[in-house]
Length: 58
Image (tube, rainbow, N blue to C red; front, side, top):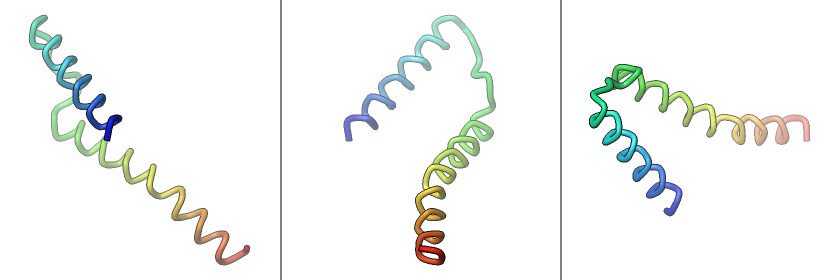
């Protein structure tokens, strides 16, 4: 749970800093969310692929 809270806090901090300096986010919100979804999917995919390979060739 702690990593999630740290991530949320840092994200909020960066958002406040961006707003204070009048900087727009480097990526549109939809593109950023799709990128994050892809990262999470890739992170989950590796253990699944390893388990399949171990089951097939293990």
